Length: 172
Length: 318
Image (cartoon, rainbow over all chains, first blue to last red; front, side, top):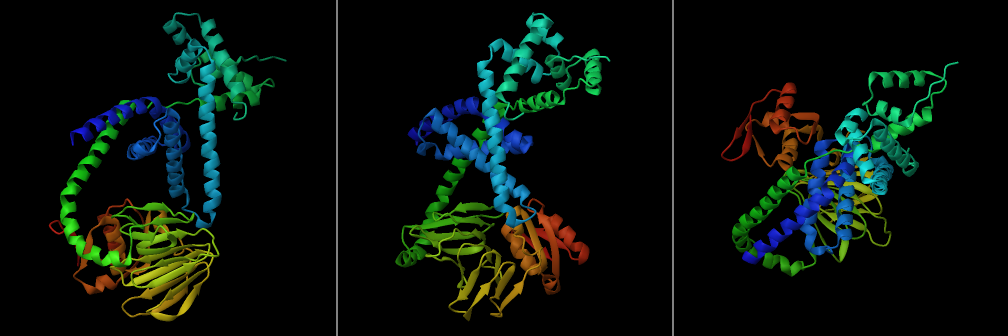
């Protein structure tokens, strides 16, 4: 009994780490496809529970776990989508299925692409771009916050835009 | 002619709604002018949309996760207590079963209101509706036994027929097709609906001739009267509503409806008044609609009273 408990708490600690590393990314992915915060949260939760239940059968490598998470989530999204969309006709089920898959695969590609672009940018540029994009701050506010001139802020934003424009050119 | 120059950073300010009035004005003037570069505008807008990032609370998610994991473990411990009793109860049947079945038997079960999707080893797919059981032998995944309701999407394999048998010995045989079988033990009726392809419905005990179905046809077998009826479905009926999270009934007696409701909500429905039990209703509800709301709506066309006996968890209809 005791042994089981310790191993469970080790497992919980591992999962806490996995949440830190993957939760936001998975959530954002689900959100981009589903456009529904509650649904996205629910499906990502279920995905982690599935991982918990199958943890012993999966190779404990970062890659194996990441791909298990993303594949499970993708399947859950497809199922969810299907439930919602098949209201019309069952005969269309295969066409629909293929459509959804390509659509959500594309979302995933874009998410990966954006992540890669962020990785190529200077830290400072990422920070300034995110202040503008995520926090909705004006250039003036950013310049005050960072103690730099508005011109410099614009330079960073411009750099980021150029990088995104070329990196995402297939999706814009 | 006036020329309007807009930098990408200004455009970004405008699209991300962080621009001040002067910038907004100049961007809008640019948009109305001949210099307007629509492609760029669309690009930056798409870029804005793609880089959207939600910021969910990871800590809250962790907390929720921990609670559901713990619930699961606790539930198991609780179950273990009962498992011992259950083993004693089952051992009688087990001995009987071991003669005919073996360890390779796979059983998938759903409880009240639950649905499951099962991928069979041969590539076929089954959607199992609430309160149902599907079992098969790993060695012969195309011979299944179903109690309750399931929708089957069969992988084509002309050499090995796909067969589903129900508790009342009705067998549905198919080759590359999709169909729905409904056979709840408590229901008088076993029903097979065909969506695509071709199926053959047979029974060793109840009827001698096999029945062939073409798409949008159904066959019902009445356990009481032993009657077998083949009929064409209208478009409403041919929907497999439960697969879409709906509870649907089409001109069905309240007694039949009660069986579906029991499968969904796990509450038995008793009729004190035979008349109401035989009344036919038509309706579609979301699976998440509470049972009393369904009663309220049915009441509109035929008045009755309903009461929940909390001790037995049963509804009394009068």
